[in-house]
Amino acid sequence: MQPLPSSTGRTLIDLRSVYKSYETPAGPVRALRGIDLQVDSGELVGVVGPSGSGKSTLLNLLAGIDRPSSGRVRIGGTEVHALTENQASIWRGEAVGIVFQFFQLLPALTALENVMLPMDFRARLRPRERRERALALLEGVGVAEQADRLPEAMSGGQRQRVAVARALANDPPILLADEPTGNLDSVTSRAVLDLFAELAVDGRTVVMVTHEPQIAAIATRTLTLVDGALTDGGPVDPGALDGVPTVDGESRRG
Image 1 (tube, rainbow, N blue to C red):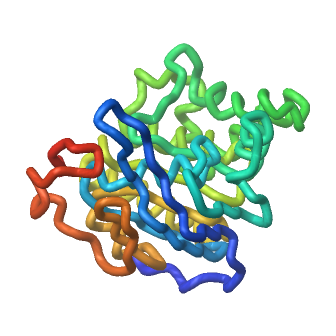
Image 2 (image 1 turned 60 degrees about the vertical axis):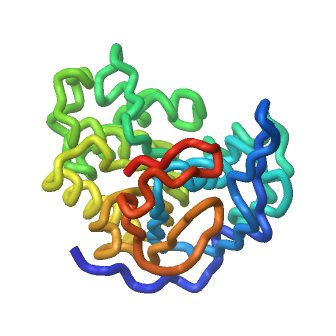
């Protein structure tokens, strides 16, 4: 794996002074503390840190699934934090593709049908064109032969590649990945990371939350998130922080 070029120089993601707090019976909990983050188009940014540090909260804000308690989330000229729920849903369907640790493929649908589903929701292509695009995407991620198989008949690596193809269905400029190699062996993890690197080389912007140490070999930048605060630098060793309380009061797990 080779590191990606630095960036195209055009800022696509811009977070300014972002705070996120949650109310709990024990009082407010701060998940993010003054996040400033700018990501250029074509970058692959890895966000690392121990469990409970706020990584998933950060991704949810980038996806418009959640909103900051204060601060600004601007993506591609859209003030995402100011969108209504309906506006955010429409924006997300066009601007962001999300890849999950546990794949989130619908078990009753084939790989092809899973990839077509986001296109069905957007209804921008005719049914035949959706099928052709889904087949092309599956071929692009190297699993065209799995098109007619159900998820249970595929390996973990194959399912994750299908999930990447599904995230690309509506041609979003941004991919958000939440521990995409968390359920894969080391060899398969490397192949999936290489796939994300190829997508970034092709101009896609990727933000990946991960514990994967190999991310440093392919990312334009690796950022560390600890207790809701973001810093530039290499990954921290999650094991070194085991047992230390997180922002939600639980012990960290590697």
